[in-house]
Image (cartoon, rainbow, N blue to C red; front, side, top):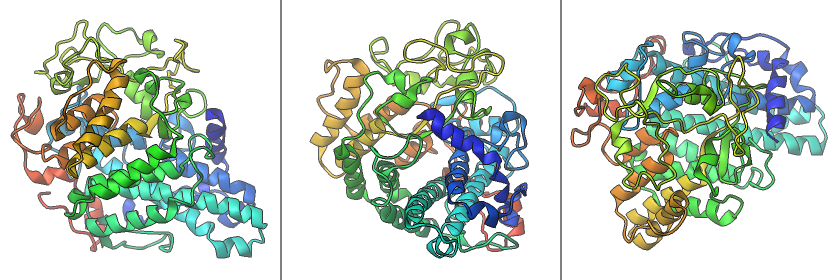
Length: 525
């Protein structure tokens, strides 16, 4: 199944050019190709264009790692959606550090970025490139256009499903924009590409827009059992709604924990997804077979190659005395390590299957950011199958087959536990935390007898380590900027210090502020 979705992504070399540009102030590199009407006049092309919308989460351009990137101003490998999202969600937290001196990386490690940070800009422009792709597809697949083109009722029904998937992908990117940047430019399919200065939508209003889109989409997408692998299903919608509601108090000032619980229960009661029997299986080259993954970002070592995504997560985590071949790749980039705060959350380290740290020749403490031996390595992602075989490509290029689990069931369990605990139902909270722990330990011996909110936060750190959730979690608990909880190099201090609360949001790129008078910069920048 994995190869089917990848083939559709590659076929977009034919039609990728029709997605000509984003709004001018977004500084995109325009691509011109086939006439849009010619492409959209054939109902068989819609799945190919939809594949470009999906591949926007994994690939950085139409031609692989040696081609031209979709967006300008950042290295192609750096600009991949998952890579920039991961860096912004993990490097400023208590979970990860990167020893490279690439522009912008030290500032993320130190919580000292500004509006010129290349990774901040890369995420912003990647989000809006993705939104523009989806907007164009939604516009071209609206009912009146399909009727004009004389498509059959069967083709129209199929294309409507594709359109709803594009709406979901747009909502996902707007969720990331809201979470990372707060008040952002807003465009939908009715705002046509050209010389246009988008208005700025307030964070709470964007929350309502995303919520409305997802509630409308929830019954319209395919069920999890019917959706082809790699495509969004009803449970993906419910999972994103759960994340939206779990963080609603941050986004709008009003908590929505009951709504979060409702969406989590919908995912769980649907019965399609189950916890994988082995935690490590979720991060291997054949994790497309896992029953736990709700929404993957699909990669393939032969057919979907990028230096971003999971290739980055594998190779950047290897260094020192580690042997690259043990992880199904041919190179060690020597960048990423775990911060000691994450290591210390594992009390029963030899028994918890999530304790995946590599310690030989590594110090737990980090006093020199650039030295790979400072900090335990964390080779969580491995280009090996569950049977121990290499991924499809571990030779000269070392691109990996590992899909990135954007949403998975254990996260839903822990979101439900937190929501229920905040609503006063500690029994349900304890049940779902212990279900996650039982998988981690292989039995009930280490189940908890009671659970606090901070216990749940720590369980999220252990279970979801290096999966791009940590910054959002720490902000929800009021710990991201606080001086009461610090980690190495937070605030630029080796031991860590508190930072100003304005770092709870990233800045809008200064170039957009200059070019669009409708935009106001986030406070503190």
